[in-house]
Image (tube, rainbow, N blue to C red; front, side, top):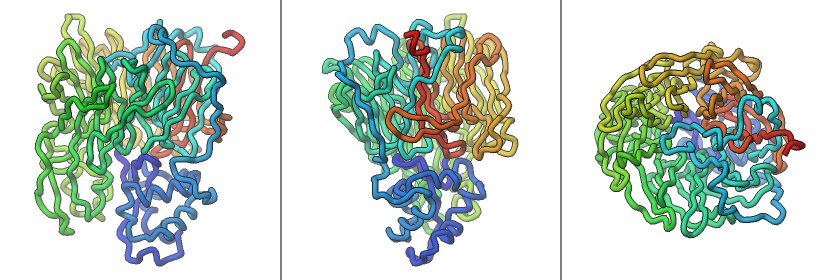
Length: 617
């Protein structure tokens, strides 16, 4: 769902460099000319969304840039540059010296907790947050008894500690908290277990790729375990107390397979949605596009044994035609799953929303909501929101890639998870928000469309991006529209509160006036997932602010600007930026969220922990 033209979504980085075909295999020493010839189109003139700006690139260690063009998805575009030329270019673009550190192991100094104790058996009876949502309905509504916060306590919140992610400009993971333990994934290839109130470390586990999803914590017969996936497509089961690896698996062997969404753990099983970065590969003229098809894979939580796997495109991709370059093309493909599955125990179903197709003909399960049987994985029903939506990132540079001119969007896939709610009549409704800016209401029994409501302009990076929240009567929808309003950044963003039983608008709050217009990447879009606590809605913005809205009228009652430098508990130089991806975790009177999105917005590398004044604890 994340469209990163001219850039790699490689797990190590979250950065990108586009290389077009080269005529000399690294023969030049003129790295600036190499950049101008092969990178500037996307990274300077900003012709495509979310290509990292050169000033942001300069803040990265050169080893990260080198890793992106050597082993990332963009490596196929740089294959005619030899290793020495790639190193010179990386050093030229970065303001940091080359130290030889591996890209995933930048410098940090963790302060480990004194006399750490194991998770207490009663931790599951106290305040907690595990996974994408506190409930299986994916409403992202934290009960007040768990949150222990109200409007009066917001004013007293203080920034108590921060964690810095070394060498990062984009942070995507939201913390999970059980008892005194905080678990979070990092963009530097790691999962951290920290003390929730002080930030001291229990353990750190190094992963193959960087982490975007929220850790899921679940008690098992062998003790409490943490489950998480990474951008290279690996899934990990870790001991929550020690960080020891219990099992790991790569649920899809496709080279571009990726697990970016949060997993679901329930009743001894772990449900894994599988996405893909093949949209990026598809921009290469000689890439045989495309062969990935999204899936859901279910594991036994204790052993890691697969219970079932269902491809959301049943047909294996087969050859269709050749491009003008003579490259063999394949279809059908796509249907990546970017959002967390929604479990419906009453019906025995699992609902996923899917991404677009990568090639035509597009499968009917792309840009769709799909219901699978929990026990077997069989598809019960599928409903498609946008037909024939075939897209790769080459679509935005189509003039230089004529073979893909007919495969160009409109790129209106789903990134947000579906929300299951009960109507006043007693019937249920499944709410699915799309990048088109349209909210769809479906009958969860058979996928029948009940109604549609347009709430935003929508587009490639527009509409409803990562997540809504809902209570018993109202769904709260943050609006993105960042790319669509690039020339008028204050026109993006805002919140809509809608009664889902009759689709009436309860209130609509426009985005706040921007105060960061002199900072590159500043805009008012609100793609970040919202978090609901009682009468309060937490919503982060690309302008770097976390705001809390009263759900009764949409007025802002708390506003924190993250654009500053921070001293962190792990000795990493910290700085805040745009807020995107997963949202706030609110537990036991504390508020936690991450800041930094250096792709389309403002770079940053911190997780912030707010609590009551220390003297009151």
